[in-house]
Image 1 (spheres, one colour):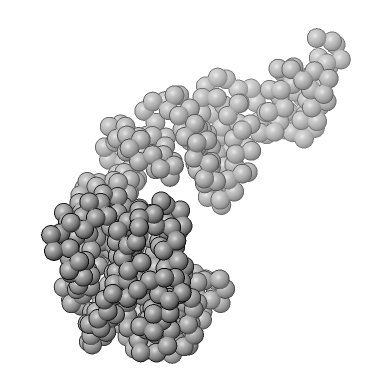
Image 2: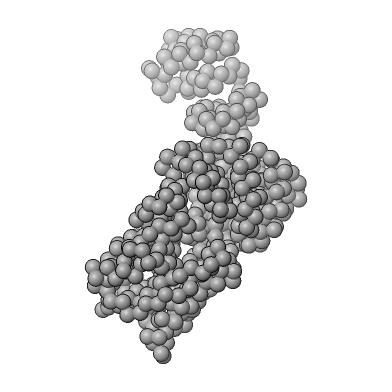
Amino acid sequence: MSNSVEKKLRKAESHLKAREFSEAEAVYKNILERFPKNKKAIYGCLKAQAKISSKLSPSSEPSQEQMHELINLYHGRRYETVLSKTEVMTKLFPNSIDLFNLQGASYAGLEKYDDAIASYKYAIKIDPNYVDAHSNMGIALHHRGSLDAAIESYNKAIKIDPHHPNTLNNMGISLKDKGEFDKAIARYKQAIGVKPDYADAYSNMGAILKIKGDFDGAINYFSQAVHLEPDNASFRHSLGRVQEDMGDLSAAIESYKIVIQTKSDQADFHYDLGNALLRSGQKNAAINSYEKALEVEPGYALAGHMLASLSGKTTSTAPKKYVEDLFENYAPTFEDSLVNKLRYEAPKKLANIVFANHPENSIGSILDLGCGTGLVGAELKGSCSYLAGVDLSEAMLEEARKKDAYDELVHEDITTYLSREKLEFDYFISADVFIYVGDLSNIFQLIKSRNRSRGGKLIFSAEHTEKEGYFLEESGRYSHSKNYIESLCKKFGYRITYFEKADLREDKGKMLVGGFYQLTF
C-alpha cells in the first residue's frame, strides 16, 4: 500500500476519533475511488456512515442510542430509512440479532415478505432461541400465504417460550385463517391468560366467535377490548357490527357514532352508520351518512350504490365489493336468518321445478350461479351427474363446502366465470342472485352463446315488480318484471317454459313477492 494511501487512512481515522464523520467519510470515499477493494477504507466508510468512532469487536452491538433511533424510525413507518441504515450497520455488527430482526420487520412493513423472512432466518442462525425472530417470521409467512409454515414457526417460538403472548395471538390468527376455529380460540385464551390486558387478543376472540355465530360471546370479548382501549376505533366498530347483527340497532348506531368521533376520516364507518340508520327507519339520516362516506372517499362504491337506491336512480348492477362485503359478513348467520327467521324457500322451489322435468331424478350437470352457502346444492345432491357452484364470497363458499354437495366450488364473480370457463351444463340455476344484478343481458348472452351442450335450461328466482324493466329498490336490491325477462328471451333466444309469482321471503314483516322462472334454450 502506498504511503499516500496510508497517510489518508490515518487522516480519516483521526476524523473518526474526533467524531468528524462527514470529513472521515469524504476521505474514505476518496481512497475508494482509486482503490475500491481497500478493506480498511470500506470498513472505515461504514463506520463513518453509522457515526461510530470507536473500535469494534466481533461481538460488538449497536449503541443504545443507535437502536433507539432505528426503533423510532420503524414506529414512524419510515421503513426505507431503517433499511438503508441497517444495510450499513449489519455489516459492522454481523452478530446483532436485534438489527436483523428490525431489518426483517421493516421489509415486512413494505410487504417484501421474502426479504423479511431472509432477515429473520439470519437472526435465527445467530441465535436459534431468539423467540421474536421465530414469531415475526411466522407473521411474514402468514402474509405470504404459507399458513402451515407460519404455524410451524409459531410452534418453534412457543417451545422456546410457552408464555409469549404475541406468538400465541398470532398463531391464533393463522389457525383461524386455516378454518381451525377451536384451535385458534384455545391460543387466544392462552394469550389472554398470559396477558389479561391484551386488547388485540380479546378483539380477535370476538371476531372468531362472531364467525361461529356466538354473538353474545363476541359482544363480551369486543366489549372487553373496548374497555381496555376506549379510543381504538377498530374495536368499537367491530362491536357495533355485532350489535347490528343481533338487531340491537340503537346500540350499534351509538357505537358507530362514537367511532366516528374518534376517527371521522374512514368511509367504512360512515357507511355502516348509514346502514344501521336506514334499517332503523331513519332514511334522511342514512342519506347524510352515505354522503359523508363519499366526502371522505369520493369513489366509495358502496355508499354510491345505496344513495342511488334511495334517490330512485336505477344503476345496471351492484358493485362487486358491495355484494362481497355483504355476504362475507352475513355468511355465518345466513341460513339461520334467511331460512329459519325469514321463511326463505327459494332453493326448494327451484329444485322442485327441476325435479318436475325429471321424474326419475336423472338431472344431468348443473351450474349453481351464486351458490352462497349451498342451499340449492343440498336440495339437488345425489340427483345430478355433476354439480358446480360459483360465488363471489369466500365465506359463503366455506359454508357450502360443509354440505359436501358440490363437485367443484369456485370463488369468482359469475360473469367472469361465464366468460372464462368452458360451459357444458344441462342446467344453470340461480337462487336470489339476480337481486344484486340489474341488467341481466350479459349473463343471458354468455349462457346462451358459450354453453357447449345442445340446449339447456336457466332456472332462477327474482324479486318481482310490475314496473317496466328492472328497478333498484331502496333496499339496495333489484327487482325484475316479467316483461323485462320476456324481452331478454326474445333478444337471446330463450323460451319461458315456467313462471310463477310466489312468496320469496319475509322483509320488514311482510312477504316479498318473487318471480320463479324456467327458461329453455
